[in-house]
Amino acid sequence: ARWTPDGGWHEAQVRPYAPLQLDPATAVLHYAQAIFEGFKAYRHADGSVWTFRPEANGERFARSARRLALPELPVEDFVAAADALIRTDEAWVPEGGEKSLYLRPFMFAQEAFLGVRPAKDVLFCVIASPAGAYFARGVRPVSIWLSEDYTRAAPGGTGAAKCAGNYAASLVAQQEAIEQGCDQVAFLDAVERRWVEELGGMNLYFVLDDDSIVTPELTGTILEGITRASIIQLAGELGHKVEERRVGIDEWREGAASGRIREVFACGTAAVVTPVGRLAWRGGEVTTGDGETVGPVTSAVRQALLDVQHGRRPDEHGWLHRVC
Ligand code: PMP
Image 1: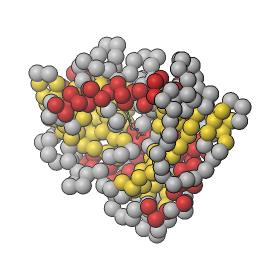
Image 2: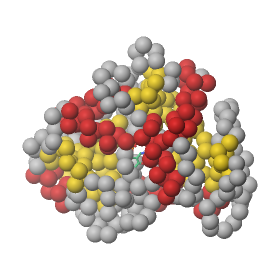
Image 3: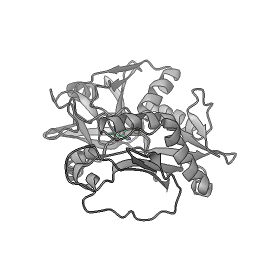
C-alpha cells in the first residue's frame, strides 16, 4: 500500500513478486528512512495456519514508524496485510518440524527528492519466504565476539526502532566477529561501554546457578524483542525467577568463568532460542558450559516456545493468530 499526505493509505493490493522500479533520487536510498519487521507463520498438525504475535510486531512497527517520521499504519492493517499475502497461496507455509513461513513487512520513503525531511510518498510492503529449521544439523552453541570499537545504538538514537540504518551500522562489527572466528557480535552500551545490550539480531539471556534467569533491561537502545518478551513469560511458567536488569560485561566474563552463570542463550524470531557457548574479546575468552552441548534451561525454554508456535502446547496467552 502507498501513503501520501492527501490520500492516506491507499492502493492496497496483493501482486506477484517482482522488482520495484525506483527513481535514483528516491529518498530512502540517500537518507535511510526505512523500517521493517520479521515474524513467522506456522502450519499446525491439523493443517491450519497461524502467525505468532503479529499484533506485537505491528505495535513495534508503529513505534519504529514514529521514530523514523514515517506514517503510522494501524496494527489491524499490518496484520491483515500479512494474512492477505499468506491466503493467496497458503501452500507456501511448510509443514512439520521447525519449518515456517517468514514474513517481512517493510516501509520506506519512496518520494524522489534530495533534501533531509520526512517523505511525502511512502510504500508499505510485505514479502514472504519459506524458512527451514535454523539449525539444520541440530542445535549447537554459537560463539560471540564482544565489539569494543563499535556501538549499535546511543541514547536518543534509533536503537529501539527496527530501522534499516541500525543494521548498516552493525555490519562492520559483525564482519569483525566473523574474522575473529566467532558467529555473532555482542554490543555494549554506548556511554559507559560496560553494560551488555544485545547481539546484532538477537536479545540475550543468562541462566544463573540459582536457576534464575536474567536479561538486560530495556534501556531505549535495545530492540524490544517479541521473543524476549515471550520468554520472560514462558520461563516464569517453567518455574524460573526472571529478572530484567543491567548486566555488566564483567558479570558475564566472571560469571562464565566461575560457574555463577550456567547457561547463556540468545533469542529472536529467526533462530527462536540459540545457545551461546564462547564469548571472545581482544585478549581473552571464556566459555559457558562445555561449549558443545545445550544447557537444560536453554533447551526447555526453546522447546516450550517452539511448542506454542507449532500448536503442541496450549496457547494460554492468545499469542497465536489464525490465518487460515
Ligand atoms: N535485537 C535485534 C537487533 C534484532 O534485529 C532482533 C530481530 N528482530 C531481535 C533483537 C529479536 O527480536 P524478535 O524476537 O522480535 O525477533
